[in-house]
Length: 277
Image (tube, rainbow, N blue to C red):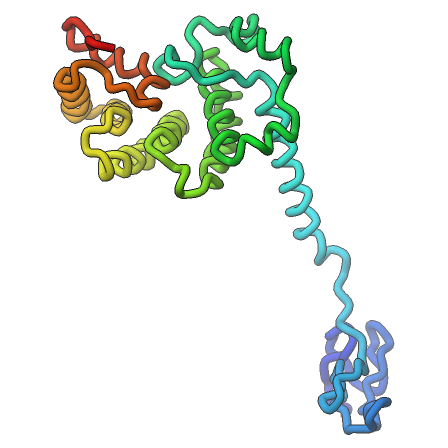
């Protein structure tokens, strides 16, 4: 009985002189056509001189499908980020509402005056301008879009953008991942219902700056989410103490960008709010 071996061309079990699947010869070849060195029956290259002496195993087209789909998915994701960031993006300002959206803005309504003027003057960002923003700029634009949709009451659409925004922040270089970026990621995690991951972001901020207002604020909101009222109030008390000792909200860019959120904490104390700002 003939011995069964793997076909040197397609890899199928085969016996006899030819493969029943692809017709490749199975008999031992006399030698390399270039140097005449002996060849193994299943050799694809001559071991002595490297000359190709066989065909690579045939791969069906279906084997390429995962690679094709991955490439198409990556291209679609890149285009989607470009289109969605360009559509309806606004510049983050200091009077954001409690989730970061623009106060008084409704989905489908007129754009803020500043945004409308910018659009009239220069139009929406081009692909070149989008590339010039860098990973952090794109991530921040997506964060703003999530918050705008959430403030407008379109929670389903906000959820659609959350994962995209989180992936964008994952692509931000470590040197650009500051407290503000971690605060954004924490808010996104809270909107996704992931309070534990939001607390991790707060812990990272506070590990570097123990009294950072955004770290304390994020920790308070995570505690709210987990119904830990005592912990939430303790974090808010630290915010009020820090602002009082500083004579007002310190003039840091990330504090000014989220000033409304901080002022909201100060008002909950029933006092006079922050001063000196």
